[in-house]
Length: 448
Image (tube, rainbow, N blue to C red):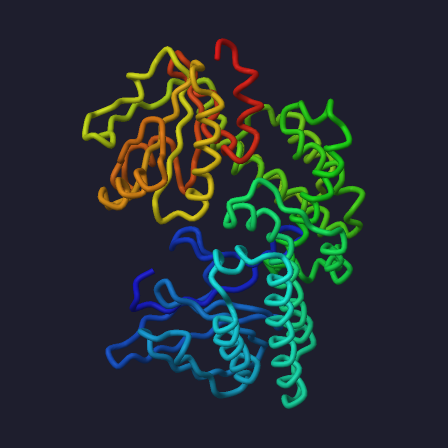
């Protein structure tokens, strides 16, 4: 959005579940109201809401969380150059919003960067996260003790926010620590997972909290992984982990709204990360068990985006490699091609690099080419990271988000992995990641 515009957006109903919609762009966002800032830096806007709830106030790429109730009349001031540090509220309904502004600054002060936090050994990690949780709890309690007539929904969500930001970090630690500490495994005592005793698996009011849904997804991942280890036969089947997850949702989540959310979260995540390859049975299971019609419609729409690519000739592209020589996808016909679209600024992309290097070693001398295409604007940063990380395979530079590969393959987010057959036809335009199930898929290919 242009920086001379103010946007307000809030919580959107999706069928029988409530989700906090995210502003992506002018077309995709759920905007309740917007206003143009005049030459003096002033603006005003109004809208109707039937009940108290959380909203987001956007100015350009910056935003602030707000809690608004019917009848509120809030005056807001800020310096756009120092957004979080200067935002202040007055008027009817300003008290909870003043708390949210201070709470954000406190959270930023307590927060370590991701690498620093998850590189810690487990005992130190627990001390750090428990300490931050206690500071936030004391801060919230002091506010609740001093403020009058605070909405009960606000109290519940803010108390839950602290708990589930804490449990979300706990649930991420095993995998993130392996990555940041460069370990193949991490040994944790079973009592490490005692934090799950604080988790309510069936509270639909908390589905607007991403740390809550993150915790639920991590818990399901752990339980399904344990179940999968007991069944070596199932472990070898296509999309085994997702299959077990969908089955276990029925056992773990009793609330219908939460259960529907988890069905949709698991299967849409599968399609987002691994495409629609051999998902027919999963989709049938989802449609049989999910009672939220809008989730079903949204998933069908998502599937439709990728179905058109299956078995079609892969759109060709040509870009310079690390030595400046032009390489085309069509040059590689006769071999399977595993394509990685990435960038140096993309955290998830960089987390896949060690897994990709390991995969390349395992499939050395096989009938497959590993082709990485960077969409960095800076050729210098790309070349530097390729050398620093010891990246193998064919390394190409597509120079920017507007490159033809992004448009032709409808790439809206990275990393994106794709698998092309020896005839140059698409096997999977949304292939599993190196850290995921790509090995199993590759081993089943004919002539690899």
